[in-house]
Image (cartoon, rainbow, N blue to C red; front, side, top):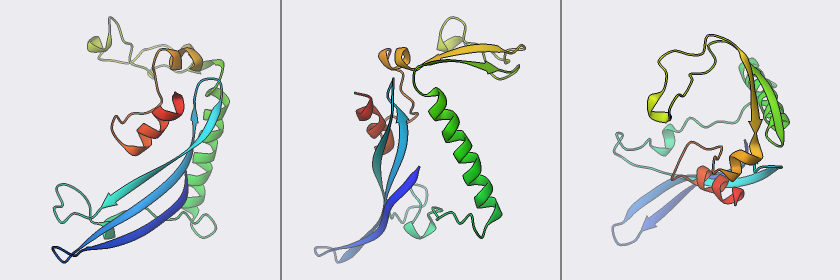
Length: 157
């Protein structure tokens, strides 16, 4: 994920004379859409609320620029993310067999409602078929109603 733009905005409501504050973040990332990998961009708006049980104030956001030249932890994180991205790019299109280790997966027997209580005790191989997954409606997002997930869903069409 690359931050393309970010800015802080204040808007005065003339009727109530209150200031509405928000932080806008625009990011670009790669996503598999079956047989190819594409870049997509999405924006997120973080409004400022004074009710801490609902949201975090803009001033308390933990987004920050990574500085690998002056921070060893940032350099390590960037390398891990780079390796992860390269692996994703290598298996996110076409079909691939991947090896998995013991205790890596919980088997699903008889549907999602009957998940096993302990992981598989043996390793093996699994075929990743990205094209068929896309045809069956499987998409690489967890969210259901947020800007990032909606952007990925739109790119998959």
